[in-house]
Length: 129
Image 1 (cartoon, rainbow, N blue to C red):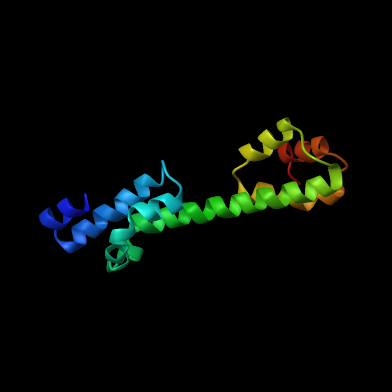
Image 2 (spheres, rainbow, N blue to C red):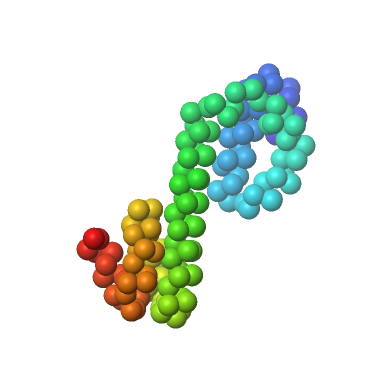
């Protein structure tokens, strides 16, 4: 692939294709595997001028950051809940995993000290204060 891009494409389109390829590879492989596979072209990828300003790149970064904040809030809520209520059962874990609203997760974290069980906490998620 690298040889063909080198022969048939100029630097900027080739770099864009490598960036797209690495994003798509991330759907199947872990980040470390992708890095190892494209190691030979990493200098070219990092040399793309303006890639960080790309609307697509910015969108990918925003979605990743949002998912990271949601996951962090969920993990914090689980840590607090485990200390107060003990380990959550699979139903509780599934319910929390389904919550993708950062404000809802923060609200639940705020309520951990006000309730006495996972069930009571989750009943609050249907009726926020």
